[in-house]
Image (cartoon, rainbow, N blue to C red; front, side, top):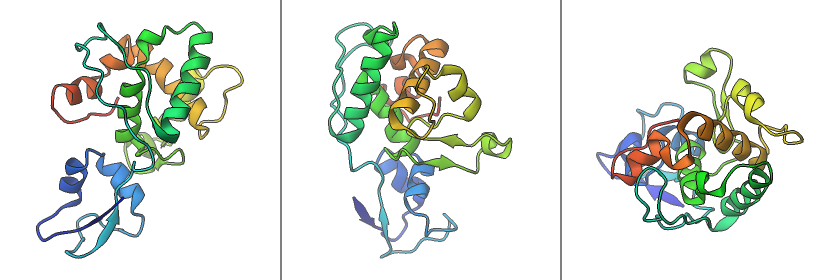
Length: 190
């Protein structure tokens, strides 16, 4: 999807308007070298339009209640495949809500499996965030499953990101950014 910049727009304001991270918006528009220098009439790409997020699951925060486990589009297919692999590895499906995984992907990478963050503190320490769920190498290596060793492979990246989030927060639905969005707030990275 594209957007024509209007007078007074800022990249951070546009990111908020379309519910994408500023980083994902910048990655989708590599021709913008300085995010503070945009102009009215310029057309930019809005990331994430190549997948269809499922509607909210209407479950209470904390992971109890009905769980929606389907998401449309290519990202949804990757999520479903990763969920199947994780389930066979013993991860309960109730801890990996598909809509909430899609929400993380939307904000972290805009659905781009080749996304790479080269400017945050992790990148400055030599560990750029990579892939759909923006995992860093050491985290990916700790939480990947045998035979799923490619950080840029969408399914492998989801597997490692989901296992990490469950270990840290108890379920995907408890990730602080997910909780904030469900409460009407802004996404925060995990």
